[in-house]
Image 1 (cartoon, rainbow, N blue to C red):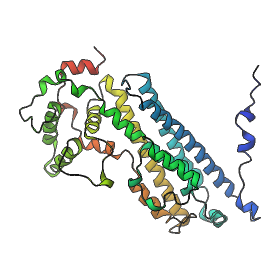
Image 2 (tube, helix red, strand yellow):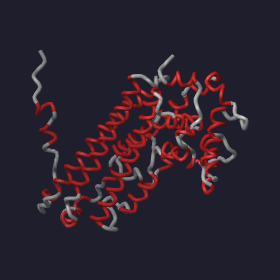
Image 3 (cartoon, one colour):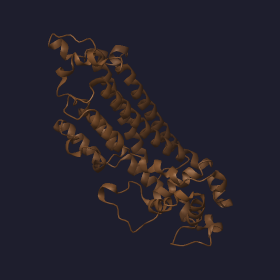
Image 4 (tube, rainbow, N blue to C red):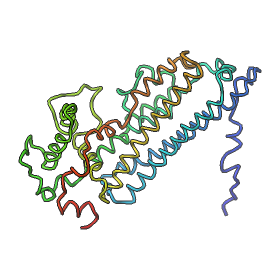
Length: 350
């Protein structure tokens, strides 16, 4: 017979509730708000652990050679990404609790923390890497792991070597089968069919061009460089994370998301954008709180404080290439009409 489970033992409360050791008490200079400061950051790290757990599980599903776009597996992916969004919203709201500590309260113990800093959170850096933030896209590359211990650096570097969620999404989008089946596009051989474009994209390019205002005409070059090969070769730092075919598939999903087969894929893309939005909101709230609390002073770990957080906010968008696809949407009434064959495929009718 298994032993009875007790609430206290199951949650390891003896360890958790006795894991707060304020530096101010050690130095016999009591600072009331240090307990709040410790518990909030411990809670952050517990939620980072859960986020990593969810992202890793999603990556395991997306690694499979084939993921049915109308399957329980894809529903699980969308559900777990939605959970990540909800957790991130909670992390944003935790800043409200932190802001009950005013600047003078923080100064009571701030200098006792040096050189400890939230910049040393290896879990957060690992989560960014697993989602798809590339080393070359990080702000402050030269010191972003400089304050971590060797074993922590190894964890972050190993995460950077693993295939990220963004890369897996790219591979999943590239597998969209519809465009390789000629029978689906018989009514799309448009007179301006050129540049070896797929007939649908030849038609859509024309519709998009007609939708642009005169001041937006330069967007057509942006369109071509996003969806088709061009003579322009981006630098290493500017290389896109999504391939041309992945971009085309993602845009197609956004355009025709009303069809049943594309609803889950659209929700997946939308959850990725929500994750980026919540991470951005968290960074902005964190930056504002730091500025309000310590002004322009450097962080306890030696970073530039608010200035570093501002730069990270501007640069650390992971799914920005998916977000920019909204630049290429047109009105529903102007969308190219899909063939009966395609409508059957997208409506579950075989």
